[in-house]
Length: 152
View 1 (cartoon, one colour):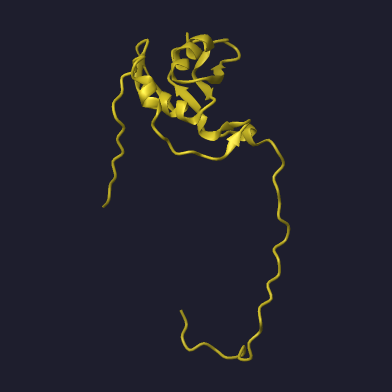
View 2: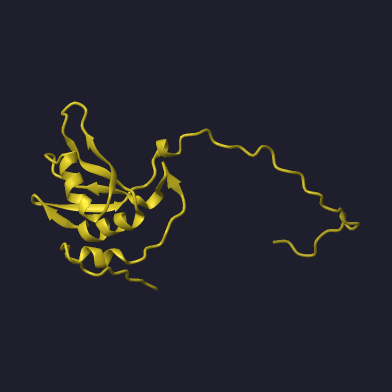
């Protein structure tokens, strides 16, 4: 049985270490939604219910420019459901935020951060169909009435 281990360096954020760490190269994903790279949107889970969008913007702006913060709220209670989406303008900034803030304690709760997966509304458009399959020109062979010697 084969197994693989993936490890990331432990990193403690400080104002002097962020610019040096930012020079690392991360893989680029070419697809984009709304002119931002696909992997530049992160999802923050297990947030305290008292969290606000302003707090998230202040906290995560240390890693780069933020395009949008979307805190998901309960319609009836008008409070946070415990998760949020943060759209960075750069994919490198999003990876830096993930590596630095994932599994951190915040107000007695451990927060989890991952790259957000595209939802149904992110690809708004009608599905493209290709129509019926094209007919292939297959030449007919002369010995079509022969029976194969073995059966499987």
